[in-house]
Amino acid sequence: MTPDRLRAALHDVSDPQWLDAALRRVATEPAAIARLFAAAARRCGRGPLPDPPGWTADEAARALLLTALPGDHAVLADSLYRHGDAAEKRAVLRALPLLPIGAECVPLLHDAIRTNDTRLIAAALGPYARHLEQAAWRQAVLKCVFTGVPLAVVDDLDGRADGELAAMLAALAAERYAAGRSMPADATDLLARLGAGSHPTTALEA
Image (cartoon, rainbow, N blue to C red; front, side, top):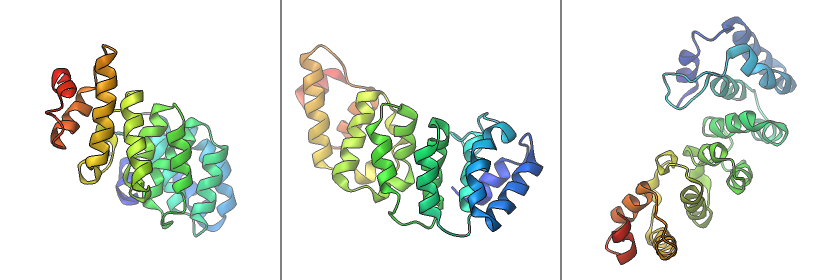
């Protein structure tokens, strides 16, 4: 994902002149982002964008506002997340991979993963999750299974999945099998790809 792609996707937003002016404003007056960030949904709409898939107009506009900042990206992203509503928090999480912040905003991922808001959890496991330590990442994947978040949202799932994650998923499958409950199909598929599909409980659930 790039800012240029998001900008192109917002070509037909309800108020493109407002967005252009807002981007210029935050570039010269960073403190203005708090008010403009909150107004983005009303001025640009909340509908889904056909491309990039999975983004809404307000998320894309808010991400662009963050990328337009001249500096202090991590500080302002943290503030917008901490004081934002659920939609604003998701927009911050989705914008993180576009910002020159390194791993500074990893605490926001931890906060999102601790919630039971499935859309926040999904947003936290995008490309910026590469900065999550492996143990925390495994727990986040397991939480996706618990909460029904599709594993397709987890960036680089097959690249990062390891034997320890397989063992954790197999243990969860065994617990669910004993309780007469099934595992989500994407979790059993992942177990199979990790070479754990022959486990007796996971095989019965496949």
